[in-house]
Length: 108
Image (cartoon, rainbow, N blue to C red; front, side, top):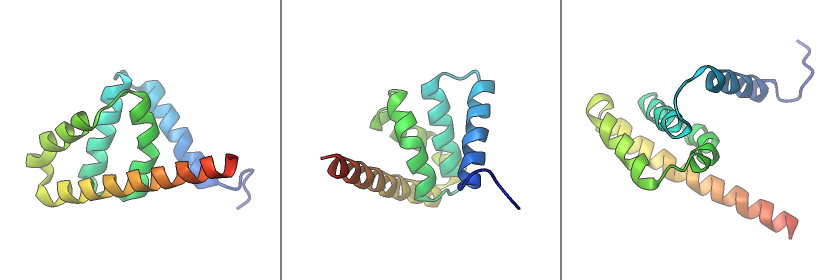
């Protein structure tokens, strides 16, 4: 299979995300909260949360709102998924900080 890109999987995911956002009527903050809830419910790995950190910050989400969404879905998805999600979010934040630090160091 020949592709025009060196990152066909990432390109496909990006295109799906853009299409989803264009077809969705939610406000940016509600969209991000909904996506975080879906990540927690699907037991997503840390890298999935990494992709949502910047958009969540740009949408103005706070740590309290993130905690609130996890509290809201806890009775539905269960404590194990919530604890895993919290750990994966913490790992994702660590990854995002490490990447940002590396970019700053490379520029400086």
